[in-house]
Amino acid sequence: MAVQIPLQFEFRANQTFANFFPGSNQEIIDHLQNCVAGTGERYIFLWAKAGQGKSHLLQACCREAQMQNCSSFYFSFHPSELPDPAMLAGLDEIDIICFDNIEHIAGQQNWEQAFFHFYNQHREQGHKLILSADCPPGEIPIQLPDLKTRLNWGLTLKIQPLTDSDRIAALCFKADQMGFELSPQAGRFLLTHHDRDMASLWVLLDKLDRASLAAKRKLTVPFLKKILAENRAQ
Picture 1 (cartoon, one colour):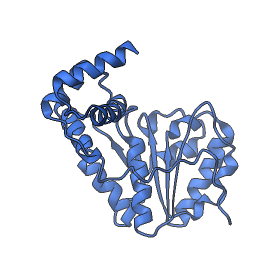
Picture 2 (cartoon, rainbow, N blue to C red; picture 1 turned 90 degrees about the horizontal axis):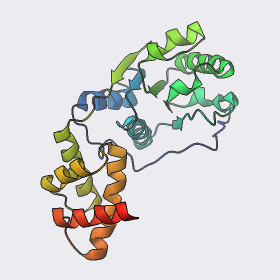
Picture 3 (cartoon, rainbow, N blue to C red; picture 1 turned 30 degrees about the vertical axis):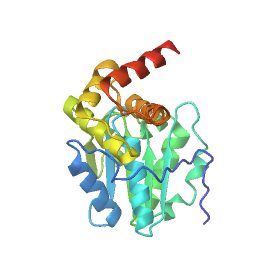
């Protein structure tokens, strides 16, 4: 059966395990890689608050699957625009499915029923399923009892938030991958004077990279002060 790829499909090939800063989450990465390789759990439920890397890790699983010549599919649910459950048609034939933000189907009867049947069919095929949410599976307000039970099967993993020292190291790590140098001192300055969530910090790094190239200057603390002041003035 042909797989119906929804319009919201958004696979990012540049989000890999290699460019994910693990902090204290290396064990989670190992479990996900083993799952994709077929040597670990076939069903993994990953949870954490927003901005801690769930989407990146699910995208990395799809990228890893492609490198191993396996079929994969990634989709992120959004509460304001849930697609028709018919999008699940044929997905039970895909080797590795990654559904992000699965909590958004809770309370949607048509989606709960459809996902329950998809889950059973996909499992019968012996394929792998990786789900993510902002809370543990038992806390998702799923109304269909059988689906609630299914979500608690397999391995549940919580992404541990980065410590401040991890955040600084992550900034330096990301900058190095982008091709420029950010000293720990500069990273500490950014953490103190900017929004601390990693998503905002990644956006800032892109701006800093462009500003550094345009000015042909290294990212010293005085230069960072100047850039942040200009951003606030805009």
